[in-house]
Amino acid sequence: MKQWIRSYALGLLTAVLVFSISYWNTGDTSSTVVKKEYETEELIQQLESEGYQTLTMDEWNTLKARDSKEASTPTSSEDPVTTFSMDIVSGTTTNDISEKLIQANIIEDAGEFESFMKDNDYSRYIQIGQATLNSGMSLQEIAEAITSK
Image (cartoon, rainbow, N blue to C red):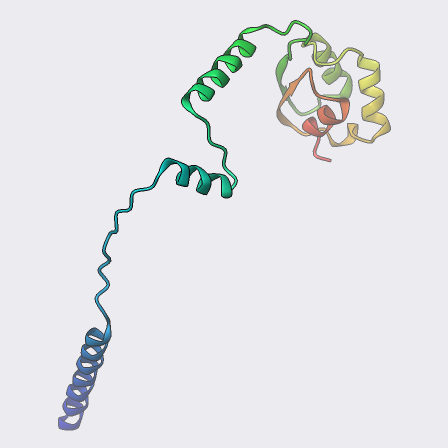
């Protein structure tokens, strides 16, 4: 028992010595803040050298005004995109899907969609669940959205 206590005390003493030495050998880690005044031209050069662009307030306001003017002009040449969320349940066929897509104005020709699904072997992989489709999607994108292929 006496030997065990001496070994334990020696271990504690060694640990204290190691911690003390490491504490005294580490330097002061506090840092001092140096305040430096930069000129505007120095800042602009530094930013542009790193790939940024700088604008004056007048240039910024001009760009904002131009953007808001462009955003306010309506573009009538584009057709609005129709979004449709479809629930596919067990037993839904390609014909059922094409009818729903025609009613929602997602596709224009049901026969073309059905033949695309059959020719590319998508009709076997119709996935049960919900699919969100829009009128801007191609037949390929629609097929990939409603199948697991």
